[in-house]
Image 1 (cartoon, rainbow, N blue to C red):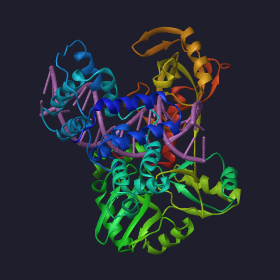
Image 2: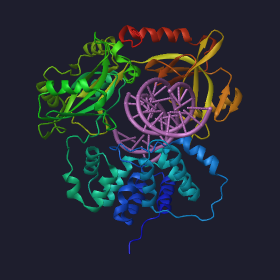
Image 3: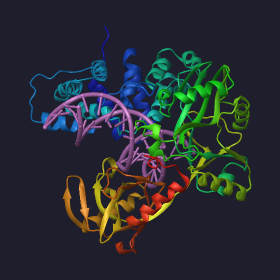
Image 4: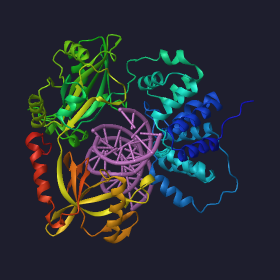
Length: 528
DNA sequence: TCTGGCTGCCC
DNA sequence: ATTCTGC
DNA sequence: GCAGAATGGGCAGCCAGA
């Protein structure tokens, strides 16, 4: 007789994982669990433990998140349920599938009633983890990385092989199922397949040009870093698809480029890596924000899409991932018949490299990326082999409010509302939670509480006294903040207890910075 | 039919 | 996306 | 050095409710 695993047992595992900090022990717990459940539960258990519900390469979504769950919990908290149902893992998963299939009129309410049904029946521990699964935040210290190791342990297959299979296949649950129940040969067989996107390699943050040169033995290829959407192009003769970093298909966004790719890439089959941007007729790039505005009337602008290709992963049936970058680049330049390639520089002269960086900035781009010339293409991971440098800016701003954190930041005010000066008041231009150490969070919490004016829900409003130096990468148009501006990627660089809020930067300063960026960037509002 | 809120997905 | 922290 | 957690802004698309 087959005994299916209850959702309670899965929740118990999650609970144990939450209280266990050692990675090795987590791996132990998970692999034991995976070996004890039924074969047809492996796939979905892996997805649920890692908070995924649906695999990376999947169009399915629940369209349920924090707000919905919060409102359901408020309503259902006083309902008494007399007959509790016990769910097994598969039943829970079927409910998720059912919710994902719903769409159209009445679907949202239907989803809510399904979810309420489940939530009211589940005991606390199961409810807690079910909610976290839906939110995609398990907070149990297990994401794909640890899960891969657990699968490797349970299947007794080398973890690098498992990892590689996952990065190629894009479905951790299925990889686990194959590894544990079909074994080594099934995993080894997994190879790149056209129109099944693979996880792109990622870059780490770099500090400086000398650091990049030193890190990589001077043997570096530098490349412009374009501010757009990372895209992976799959091409089989006439058929072309474009995928994003998270493996979603965005081919429909750029029909013009598809036909250019047909004509200007000389290959029968290929997979290419690049960045999608929008430029005006002089070649100036539009801000990222405007690249994303796909539903405005484009007939009144001179906006056109471009992809700058910088890598090739596959050509005419051959996997190129294990060729050194410089060889992949050579192949790429051979097959491009006029299609745009990312601008590159091979040099170890710091002065020349600095000029290259400056020219990227002057052309309106984001910065540059230094890549080790003999590095292989590591799927889905950040490696020191690729180091990025971006232009950044800084402002002195004042904290006008703060939000209580969650998880390990529960006891601290950890998310700060930042404001610039305007006349004699302060106008909010964004939030940040980045840049402080635990110790600094602690001190900052104490300081801000001493300046508290009032608390509303999760937000503590304070007298504008604490000045911080905030680093960011761009000033954006904001539809949400009264100042009409917002900072992109804001983080605190320094706490300036020495500085008075009277002397901080002003909304006028910010406005000027915003307008200045259009010297280098294209302006979508110009012709409208 | 319009508006606003929520979610997902880009960064 | 960026940053910090524990392993 | 890696993996995970904690959170940022804007835009499109969908749905509910007025």
